[in-house]
Image (tube, rainbow, N blue to C red; front, side, top):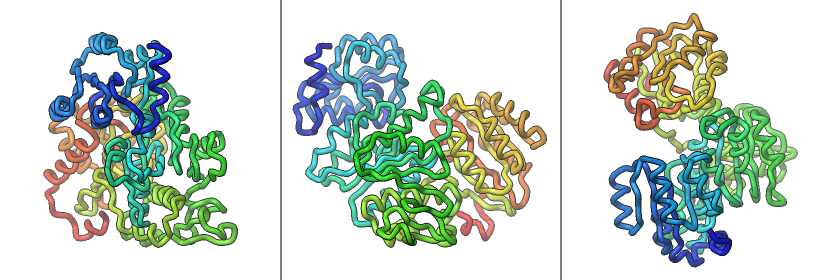
Length: 502
């Protein structure tokens, strides 16, 4: 690739620049990959999407929009096609590892390689209403915090939406003809690896624990990716007082002059912090008299009435409130938004209460950090766990929660890691291993085993601490199968107090 061609690509920083005829290879045809292809075709670029698998509808739509494509599961054949296409720009879907042969070839020859977030930042000026970006990441709680923040912004009178890793591609939102006042951009560590030079209004790392080590290579690289969220932040770097790593990230970040560090935590906040005082969630971060008093947001009792008082949810609410207050949303609007908020499916979702036993679906707990947040919310648990652990050792997770475990039910194709951790740290806890041979019956068997252990007052908790793709399509599929199994085995009629516990 010539230096002149490279300079042309790097100079493209606006929707209104000339993208015509630019040869762009898009790697991957998930939701993100299609949004990239659709956007670039609209801009007049010549687009070729290279992918190993995709749903038929998206593949057919590539022909409709006028994109070239190659469906080829063999990586070597993909590379031959990429070389023949001779791209001037490669846009990589989030799941592609840094050492993937296609991205490695492109980088070694000097081709510009971007992720979808970097591309979206350059194209954010399609409408005159250019949105501020609020960036959200963390090992656990990203989606809930992103949704809460957007909900608060809307309650405050702003046009806002949660986008990014949450499921709605940023590029789709940017092409909305009405434009937005703010976009709450949930960022995975994969997207942060190729973040580029964005400059958000506010940003947060909710927490950090080892995850996706198989993708990043080691914990240091994973944490380095997470820390990128604070770079070039303009107004507020929000961090977790209960997680020293996030504070260190803020201290080391290169931010826009004048950006403030705003903390959140479940303790009493100091000036420039959000926290809890006498059962009241308070703001001392964006209060004019923050050195002497605090603004009241909502009470813990009110949140408990809506099923939002678990410790990890209180942290999410405080972080979201800090982000919303950085955009000028008033405390009354924040209270209104929180009390009208409903959690996503498969996120600490009560399925049924029967004979004093509560059945909870937290299939979205796909890593150890998310699982420990769920486990801490219940005093005595029959824990359903297992799946793809992504290179993370769960021994510490089992050790920490062994005292609260009434039983263990292990699912997943490879159960060796879970069994080793259990034998070391919870050898006396009753346990069952679900034969992975028949995925269709996995959850029904898990429910039967759990029911044989659980006693009145227990919670049967699906919090796998692992990804789902060894046996299920995704965490949603896993959660739906768990819920269906609970209903099939126990019947659909709940105890009278079930609704109150949802």
